[in-house]
Length: 135
Image (cartoon, rainbow, N blue to C red; front, side, top):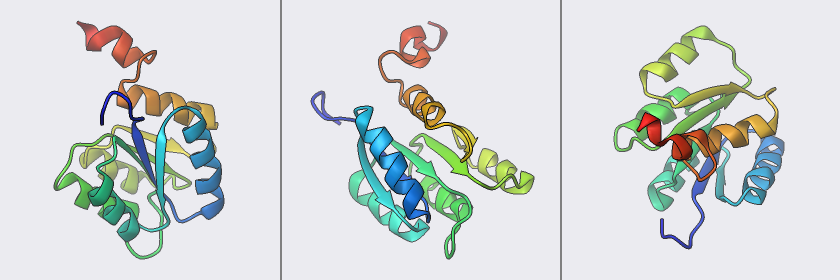
């Protein structure tokens, strides 16, 4: 990412309506966006674009979010936010073990997602960049 470019957020979700709404909100907040409607398509975009952050659904047909997360973690420590309808405790624990940075349910307001994206990326104005992690 150059100083002139916008951080890139990759959204991986099988719900096209959610992707459209989230992509609009995220891009209006000054981020570049890329979207994929499956885990496999998301992995391809991840490898092509090396995003600054991934927002990942857990419950998708074919390759689910846990497997997608596992494959991303094999090569990258890119921040990942899980955003899902699922409240399955087992999937949540697996996601934590694989190193997700945050976990939200889809009923959370988009403002909350945007705030979590800012924090995970350490964007100016977020608590991470303002506080320099306690330094």
